[in-house]
Image 1 (cartoon, rainbow, N blue to C red):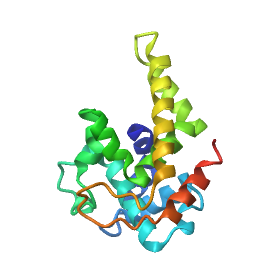
Image 2 (image 1 turned 90 degrees about the horizontal axis):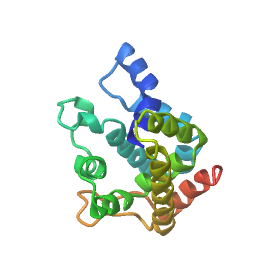
Image 3 (image 1 turned 90 degrees about the vertical axis):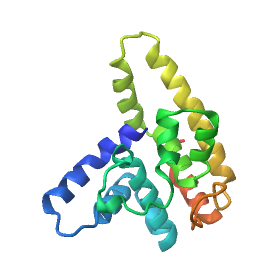
Image 4 (image 1 turned 180 degrees about the vertical axis):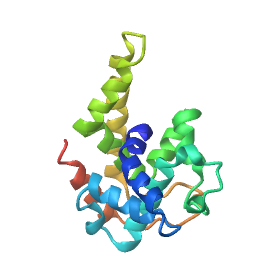
Length: 184
């Protein structure tokens, strides 16, 4: 999932790098989010939109967690919440990730989006094991259902011990579910 979003964001990031008029990468992230999820930010509060974009930033830059990029200073949450499901997988890490409505939405969108499915199928086909694509597709489908379930339960989504108060109200999670419905 992370590779898909990083790949989709890359043209926006490359354009930002070529212009680099300011130190903020936020305009490129907002443009990407508006392109990938039309109407989602417009339907959320300003604070919820900010949170969504900030968490997307951590996802697409998860590989740069140990760099000193100005745009990655003072993240809303610890990078481990994004990285552990990828590199130190456990059920606990997965649950912490999906506890954030934004991440549950992003995974559910990834699993349901035809463009993302094609992207995944192409990546899985690169593996030499003939059973790998089918196994991974099945696992992603199961995780997509779990992500949808977590999103449906989203209150304000708040991981225990998170170092910030979330701005994702129940209505924001509902708006994300509506946005997701176009693929379900």
